[in-house]
Image 1 (cartoon, rainbow, N blue to C red):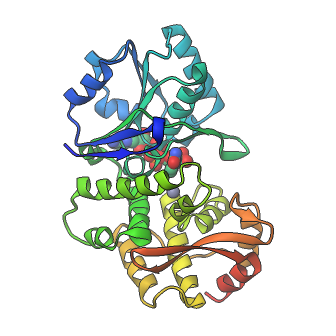
Image 2: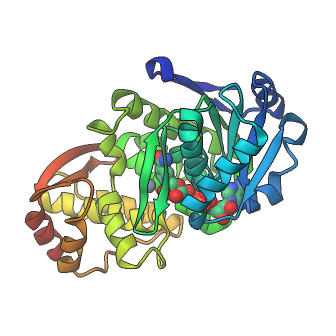
Image 3: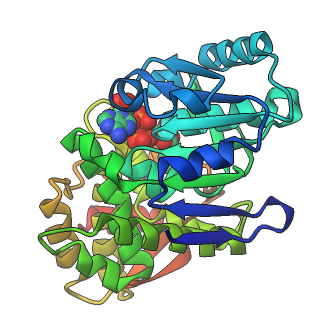
Length: 339
Ligand SMILES: NC(=O)c1ccc[n+]([C@@H]2O[C@H](COP(=O)([O-])OP(=O)(O)OC[C@H]3O[C@@H](n4cnc5c(N)ncnc54)[C@H](O)[C@@H]3O)[C@@H](O)[C@H]2O)c1
Ligand SMILES: [Zn+2]
């Protein structure tokens, strides 16, 4: 068993890898009641795993629309009916949707009840379960209501990934490729191999996220590196109304495009975009940016990371190294036109 300690003073916690059911059960037994929150797909595959260790199981429909006010208030209702208090434990057992929703419900119910993350998608294992960002969506905007609220532990078992639909798996792989490009060339190279060591891959991603979160818990500086590919990715997601591309697919387009822009700026070493493109295609991820730069400019003017005329962008210098830069939006627009 391997663990990673996330050091955040009194909010510190362990990420525990390759956990056995027994270890999780042992952890759960420290609490009076254990309430497991999951979605229908995860419940179908793994719903029986914890039956004897939990007080109640709350099952929500699968999909992004579950990250809603309605689900949140439904959870509060269930917690009240079950008599949940701060001596109890909430378990988020699912992908990023269940993790974000359950984390936010735990952060706000009784001003904070303990919770753990047991992520079941690749994206949740390498990204959303670590770092303490919790949220729900509003009809007007995704993740617009949320809190920083750290879990008591994260239990990761990569065997759970075996049942993921291919597109959901590849979606998470875009974030894995992101970690390789921003920080870890060995990880990037591992992704090119035929048989993947998922435990090692997820471990490395979590360790990078840990390092960055420890240095910048509240997302005011270095944590921006994790947004590599995301500013343009959000443009792509919004332009296609969140329908044509998954988040990871949109980020894939964003990563390749930023690398191309980096070459134009003289920051990215030539050949880097091609390496990224080849890795993206291995995981059936797109790379081509198809949006008119004028429309892109309008969309990223609304971006959270945009400050007046300037916007923060992440540029890879080469595979494994990247940098945060503040650029003028018009300059970025010109680079997009020259692609
Ligand atoms: N908090 C953060 O830092 C952070 C970071 C990135 C993304 N997110 C959020 O994460 C969400 C996306 O997460 P996601 O991609 O995990 O989506 P998801 O939770 O919707 O899961 C994707 C699909 O896979 C199914 N599934 C989950 N585990 C499975 C398994 N082991 N076997 C078979 N099917 C399984 C789910 O039921 C769902 O249909 C978004 O809402 C996004 O905003 C949060
Ligand atoms: Zn992302």
